[in-house]
Length: 246
Image (cartoon, rainbow, N blue to C red; front, side, top):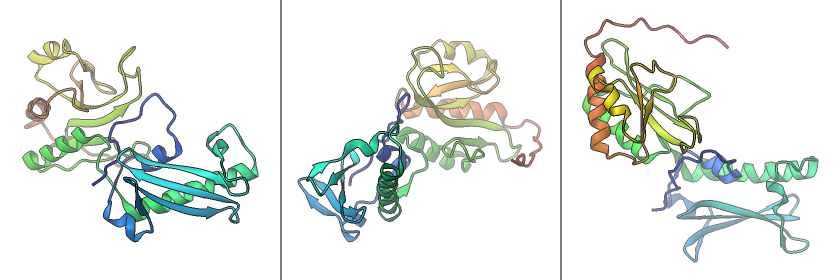
């Protein structure tokens, strides 16, 4: 089975395909019934667009989804539609037709994943198996930012999220992290390790951001989560407030 690259794209402008399929994984069995042909180790489907004057050729393989638009009058590729700086009714409509095709393919042949980062998915499964806590996604603007709460007192013990380059410090590459609350006597020792940072958007005297994306083994991340859970377990219950209205 083919899977789209699960590495977060940070510090770059996503191309159209990456933007639309980000956070989705392929259900390969559905491609053939949706009209794709398997040729030379890739699935291919052609769409006639813009009154048949152009064709959109969509290709799916182990590297993800790629595509191109061809001008049928000259039998030449038309890459200009990818340049967002080029505006106008014609180029805008061509770009939108292409995006609509990708959205239809996504709806028919892909499914949304819990997180685009594979280790984040595995860690989430560990949390559910161990503590039976499911993630809470409280921010519509950040659909993959997940809060883990102790069900007995509503207190946070984990927060999974991702960052662009330099958000966690100068020259730090973008990555997925989980925020945890370690025991006080371990805070400074953990902070000395590469790829562990002061907690982003949290109390920096109590929380740390631990890199995911396989910077550390799963077992190590799991042990830190266990410590974080213990730190908040047994504390007084926190009152939950409804979200603010927009």
